[in-house]
Image (cartoon, rainbow, N blue to C red):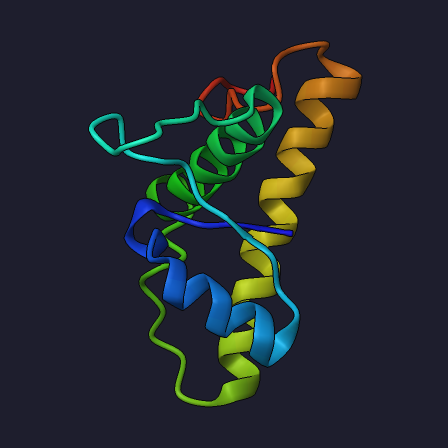
Length: 108
């Protein structure tokens, strides 16, 4: 199961993706569509958490800006940014008993 954005709402695209690589694409419907069905709450929460994490990686760690000259440098920088992001989340949740997503709060 893959949760997609509203840009992938086309049934033909979903069928092609399933027939080609057996990926079931779950896309929230637009409210003005015929036969509108509300998106599952658990999928909405997962989607919101993923979007929040990607936004924080771009905002706090500038993961979208990378000036590496080699592939190894690129991979090292991305891994270090994701590791530091994960470490801050771990410290927030298990040590300081705070929310996972509060990255801008000082650790000390």
